[in-house]
Image 1 (tube, rainbow, N blue to C red):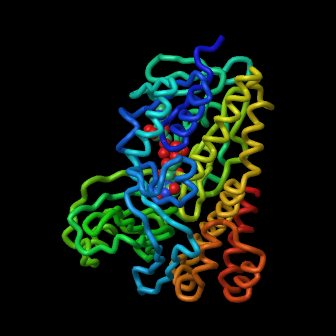
Image 2 (image 1 turned 180 degrees about the vertical axis):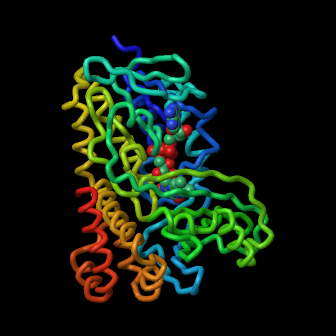
Image 3 (image 1 turned 90 degrees about the vertical axis):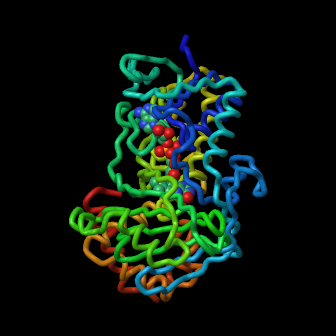
Length: 410
Ligand SMILES: Cc1cc2nc3c(=O)[nH]c(=O)nc-3n(C[C@H](O)[C@H](O)[C@H](O)COP(=O)(O)OP(=O)(O)OC[C@H]3O[C@@H](n4cnc5c(N)ncnc54)[C@H](O)[C@@H]3O)c2cc1C
């Protein structure tokens, strides 16, 4: 008899949603988190209606910090831009991350889940080829029928359970909370590209006319190109200096994180163990959007955990049904599409200037096509148009992709 039905390692959006749901299904759930609380972290903040639906919160509730009516893609170097308004994108919102995290934690607690903080998972415990729990901190151990690795991009559960990440392309990011700004338009979010940013973008998500979140996320395409980039703090300072709205701003908080962006890993389930969220590569890579995809994966996983507990079957085959259902979803296929795109773009950037390509995109691509590509559901018609309008660039990206396949397989 196991002590717990489910152990969830990590309280990011994936772990919290999984725990909220497993507790709701009446499963005896233990959550282990290495930090001191669920808050003060980078959960991810820019989301669409989908995330609100998964979380079951209303757009006018306290969980939403701001709402955007348009999103602008702009070059820091030349000023060329594309405006994607809500007719194309739908609504976009800025989560109040702490409140959302507390909401999920409190829902899980009220349904009986146990949370242990300052609890760093070291490894999974295996018996007869099946994971039966975890070791954490110095020598503590807990056992469960199902262990969930929601412990982020450098997941200990994933590593010690033996999952492999052949295309582990990571995006490194920092998010700064700025106060004391002036005259910011709170209805518009910005994504900036530029030489100083490298392969990635700088984003500005205003919270009000005087407060904004500013982040920088970059993917290294090669060591030398990565080393040649200015440090993120310098990029931030330069942006603040050259934009009157943020000239006198103060940095009130800083958070950092790492997001996988080459798509879902080849296997993320095994006997007694399943991964969820960043640990499984369940992130929409081009925009680094992980909150919605984590909520979705957590809910699918929790439903399967309930089935496994009901049937008392935690075999490889039984856990894999979560993976099978997840992979068939539209969100998973968008992740796979954008992951291939990002992989190709990173290879392209090894041998070409990605900013030159970004300038072409900003100068010539229409907002509808850009939106389809970012979301990972471009139609065949869109691809045909791209092929003809941007042939030299598409050809280079295609060659990059073929090189990527040659190096590491599909
Ligand atoms: C700078 C930045 C900005 C982003 N902005 C957005 C955005 O606007 N919208 C969006 O949708 N996505 C965004 N993302 C992506 C999103 O934040 C991630 O995809 C998402 O947080 C992944 O959730 P997760 O639960 O899988 O992992 P994480 O959020 O990484 O959570 C993992 C948790 O596990 C804990 N943990 C780690 N190791 C252990 C261990 N050994 N033992 C116990 N606990 C452990 C960590 O402390 C953490 O609490 C952003 C990412 C970054 C880096």
